[in-house]
Length: 295
Image 1: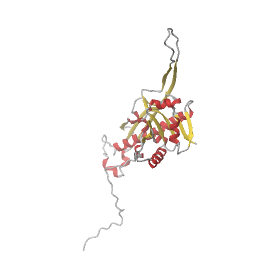
Image 2: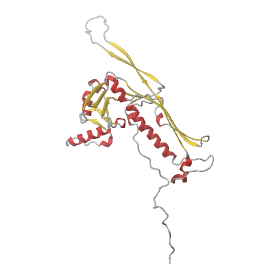
Image 3: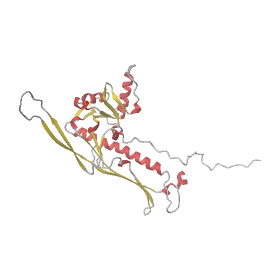
């Protein structure tokens, strides 16, 4: 007679891969790929501009008469320091499936899945920075592009319907801005998706289907203009347009939002993680910005 294995006190089996930690995927600071990055800004920095006009005169006669103007102007861009501090106790994981990566010995402390912890937090920083670039942060005293576009004198402001948002933004772009080329209409990802869907539905045999996963597309009929979906405008039903270099993002050291320090603190008995950077946004010429919203 075979012996019996009594298993009534055991929980159901759950397969666990002890060497894998799944990390939630986040959208990064996509906007930084499409704007002018100004470095070495510690606190406030001046954006100095010269606008020159000339007047043609009849050159068939001798004489000299000065005409035209040279106008100097200045705008200020201000950055605020931002820090992220976190700490972890490796022994908190002793009661979890990750305990096989712990080393319980003074001077040999390890943080299980260290690369995953660091990567997940850097992604979270980029996702949060994307929101701040557009929406600002009252606690930090930072204005975002939406704040500037809605309050700055000279910005071209239009109200429209959700279905016409992108077209209304395009129609409001001054001709002088279009002539500069490399114009971008930044939009809410949902607005972008619906716009792509509408254009794909209406397209004809000689127009290619646009893949919304690309996150950007050329404005139909004007290759000078690109439509770009950014996470910072999610849920805003807003479009902000201008040429690429009119959008300024200032920081001290480029890429500092991706630079981290991770160390084991013997005094605190903890692993500590630190990121420090500064950030701020501004438009060079507000009169060359279009701010379109849904009424």
